[in-house]
Image (cartoon, rainbow, N blue to C red):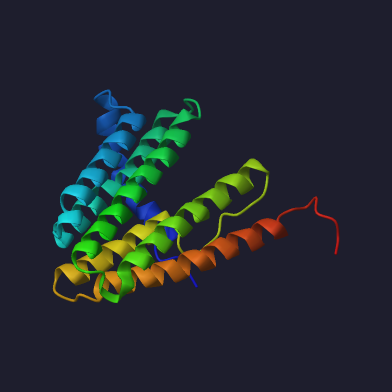
Length: 207
């Protein structure tokens, strides 16, 4: 099964971001500044709109600022090697944005009296999402390969966004359903990455 947000789609977005990236670099804006600005925008959109029940507006704002993940990466590629702090900053800001998004979803569902146990699914999705990211980062630090999985960060945000839009347009089950689907896909992704990392361990003794 292919990833929801495929590699070709990422490449198309990156190509579309080229003119904007060039303009920002010529204007003296750094990739790190774009990373932070994107996180601030996503956090504000999630907490100020999504948590208050403005699900359609919140989903659109968060999606817009989530695209800075493509933009700052394109800018870094164009600028050339400039240290590794940018990668650390990007990952750290991603975790903050994820916490804001799922925290906003949790708060909204709490106010709606937790339809379909959506709050439980939100907590599970947030927790497993952190594990998904951790397994990949830890595997890479150990020289292993865990770059696989159905539900990476882009897929998680897309699913939550679609669920928010469905609920925002009157389908109350939309957001909880998306969260439960995401919880399942995240659990599968954790095991996919662990299994793939184990198979990439060339130093492991033969069975």
